[in-house]
Amino acid sequence: MRTGKISRKTKETDIQLELNLDGTGIADISTGIGFFDHMLNSFARHAEFDIKLRAEGDLYVDEHHLIEDVGIVLGKALVEAIRDMAGTARFGEARIPMDEALADVALDIGGRSYLVLQVDFTAPQVGQFSTQLVRHFFETLASNAKITVHASVYGDNDHHKIEALFKAFAYAMKRAVRIEGKDVKSTKGTL
Image 1 (cartoon, rainbow, N blue to C red):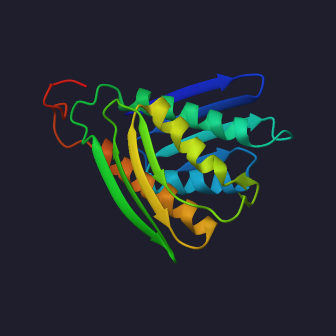
Image 2: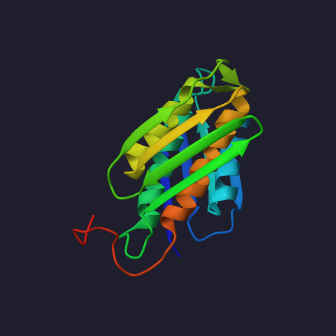
């Protein structure tokens, strides 16, 4: 089983995450931010990753520290679960609509972190989730998971745009981590 288990405790947050790449999409997620829980549950379901996440933080300040630290922990858990990349597809892409919104994601889990995200939001918040933290979450996740992510989203409804992005990211990750051989997908023979 390709699994990762990461804990992170700071003065601002306390997070425990368990990840199984070979799961069925079972999620047990609690962050205290309803919309963020909804997005992470959607990610787990559509990637078919099992995720158990308990996250507490200084939400009386705002949600920034908690969302950032979940990105750190999820990224590190992905690295731990993917391990040596032997036989892993490495690349993944997905195009996912949600009503009027459409998200495109292409990614490479080959060890180089970079994020290109094209999206504009009209509302400052969806529920208790700041829309400006969408970019920050994916930057933090990409950096800690050592993945390159190119994503673009358009639409009118910010909830739909964010949800389409999380679902497209899920499907792209599901495709990138699938096992389809024995060799590392690199002309160098290693990553």
